[in-house]
Image (tube, rainbow, N blue to C red):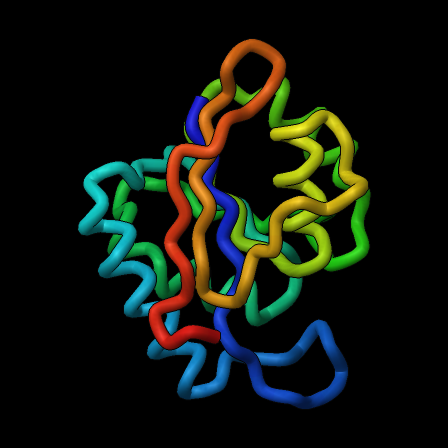
Length: 153
């Protein structure tokens, strides 16, 4: 199974946190990431899961042209401080390629858990508007590639 971990793009600095939307810079970042993901020829999730926070949903929506056949799904459990073990269990039951658009520190801890078997110590840092591609091999995951943010964020 293929998995893409994508951190939301730059968001406005407003309150409340769950309502923060993408900034103009963030919208540019997300569109650029969509073009880059499409150019890899390797981004074909069947589902795009995003957190309940607005900035993740907006990022996922802007990534849609890169995977036009993917079903967008808002998923609880993908907020910044949520339990990576619960996400890993859900992924273990998933049989279709998935992209997850979420937040830090969840994504870095999740990548660390999937690849090394433990969320701590964190060995990845998923920056805004970046994508980390993993493949499941047996019970573990291996890194296939990483797209850093285009603007160096």
